[in-house]
Image (cartoon, rainbow, N blue to C red; front, side, top):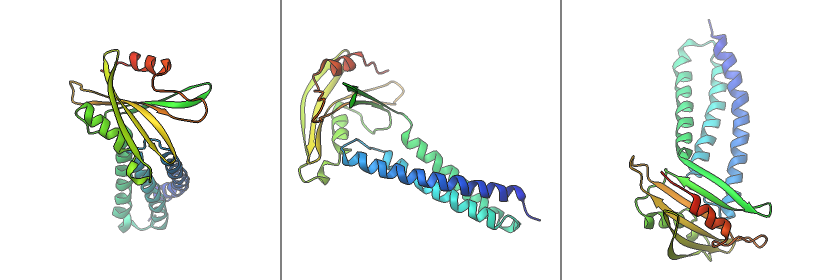
Length: 217
């Protein structure tokens, strides 16, 4: 005697797995576009790939469930697929936890982003600068280059200016590092995308006010 619950669950997994698969593919394409525009993707690629794999696994598990709903000897196989899906979902979420990104702009155009993260492996201001440059993958561009500027202090936080450019555009970042007592050290980045329209420079009052008002604890 089979399990109608397994059959119904399998059908639902096929439906939602198909939807998740389409969404994951669209998301991956979106990540590719953002990276081409110079956006800092960091661990989002890893999270996206794992989400894609989880969607495929959910779809396949649904098919297996429907196909074997009346075969008790296949129960362990279905359970194994279920565990794999849960594990991949948890790992995907872990990659993106601990990061906050806030976009800001000027004249109705988004031209900058504040990112605060505890997921970066850094232990100093120099580490933060190197991480900022690393995630841009400048060595993959023909004209990729970076320039590290002087330290500047806004409020109680010291930042370093990093200018980066390649054939597809340029951006400037104020990068900082904050050491916390609980060991979850904070990576801080205020990024300015250098657009042809509505340019916002790193010394714009809006950027300075944002840097001065930020408190990391």
